[in-house]
Amino acid sequence: MLRHLFTLIWNRKRANLLLISEIFFSFVVLFGVGAVLITTAKNYLAPHGFNYEQVWRLHVRAGQGQKMPRAELDDVLRQVKALPGVRTVALTSGNVPFVFNTNNSVFGYKGKKSPVTNVYDADDHYAETMQMPLREGRWFQSADDGSNHRPVVISQDLRQSLFGNGPALGKIFTWDTPDPNPKAQDEFLVTGVVDPVRMESDFSAPIPSVWLRLLPYDTTHWETANVLVRVAPGAGGVLQEKIARTVAGVTRQWTTEVRVMNDDRLHRRMYTLVPVVGLSIIGLFLIINVALGLFGVLWYNISQRRAEIGLRRAMGATGAGIGWQFLGEMMVVTTFGVVLGILLAVQFPLLNAFDLPVQPYLLAIAAAAGAVYGITALCAWQPSRLAAAIQPAVALREE
Amino acid sequence: MTSAPPVLRLTNIEKIYQTKTIETVALNSVNLTVNRGEFVSIMGPSGCGKSTLLSLMGLLDEPTSGTIEVDGRAVTSYSDKELAGLRNLKIGFVFQSYHLINDLSVVDNVELPLLYRRGMGSKERRQRAIAALDKVGLSARTGHFPSQLSGGQRQRVAIARALAGGPEIILADEPTGNLDSVMGEEIIELLLELNREQGVTIVMVTHDLQQALKTQRVVRFFDGSQVG
Image (cartoon, rainbow over all chains, first blue to last red; front, side, top):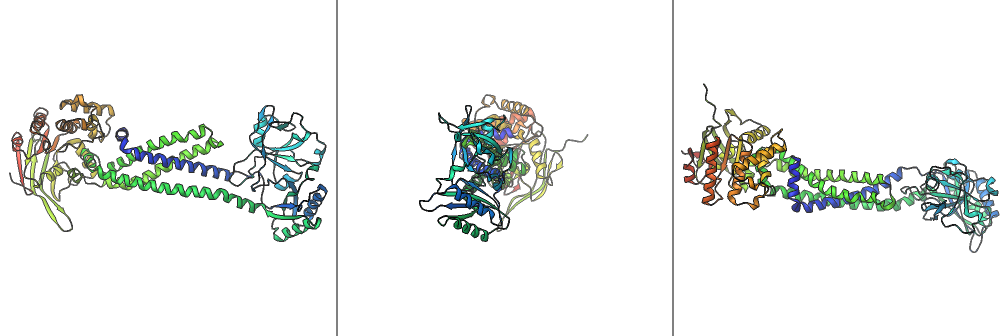
């Protein structure tokens, strides 16, 4: 019977072309939406690689035309750290987690090139403040002051790209296009490796990252400083006010803005959620339209094929058999559309489109195929029941 | 020695079509027996209930009252599945307008009743369909589509389809109604040959007295009742 259905659909391919195209486009839309949703959900469920809870971000400004000598900045950090409720304080670059500020570069090691890598400046207390566990080695410490090269900590994904499965600790790498006469600070000595991190948003994929140790003389030309503060659970507005007063108390010109990292995270995720929800709604409307279209086409199809239904009943088909045949035909038509859709969809993982791993694409193909079969089966169900209920004697007489 | 039961026996058949406002008596107290190997013609004016009778004989419809027996067994209380099985095994249909599926080739059309037969493989189906087409002289047209055939050839395909399942009885509803006299004559000769040489029981509805007189028995209907 299946072969008969395939023959029938193949011979009616012109009449079914519109239906097959509709199913093909539905599959493509569902595949696209599915790939986005699966990737987004997979990222969301992955660990961030650090703990953003109870972390505040201070954006300290020196004031118009003012600089930030390290001694004064250290004084600010010491006094903030001394406040009750403050656990640790770390100095970092402006590209703190969940803000729209990115600093990236490409690195090289013995001819190997890293992917685009996020670059962070971090002091010796950064790992403690961000609660970033180390997989290998150690974070920076004052013993590194005398190092001939700039100490760095790298993420596991950067480690894999530069050193593969070989040892990474103690290795020295450089920018991808190093200076012919490199300075010590442009040669990076790996002291530790951390887990992959997702600092952009809840829905972003891990990006290879490197943390460069902030050297003592680094802040002399700064006009602003970014400070991460880990506070005790329950700390709130009162402590924020105290921090602002403390910063202002050290140097009268300096001001600070205190932001809660979790608020930044919630704010940032809206930038992903809004388009994803929008895309899903558009996809849903499209699918509803397609479903209604299929329903109408099938209804029309059955009314056009009443004589054939009568004939099949006369030849020995049961009413239920006719219903299953129409459902089966719809599944065969769907298979033509889905196969075309799969041929297109598999190009994405094969061509490594959008730099995504293969798994979400395969899951999206499976989900889209399942959804398309589900929708068509649902749409075909009622018209098929209608076909099953047609009286053969009446249908045969109509022509 | 007991004689074999008739292939078909209709006893006190009544068929009434009822709508909210109108009640139409299509058949009234019909008693008809068709014996194995008979060729029976049913004649009567339009609207006298001939096609309704054929639908009932073909188990495509249920009588309002009365009994239908196939091979001596009453089938009035049979389920849809049982009736479908009986139609498939015992009855072949030939229609005035051929009822071929235009999107299927000639051989695929002839295979149609065999698709609903359990346990029959595709190879056997194909062999039986080709054998049936051979019987009607169309074995060279297996790959053609109905639109590529003449009216007479289409009706031959329909007869081959009715024959493919090896039925005991063929019910033909005005099989020559859409054909010119020459082609009509060809079809009647084919049916007569099938009846004579292969012993197929045939019940044919016709308006043509000349054709009816060539059969073994003529049953006449008027206003839903058997008149001769």
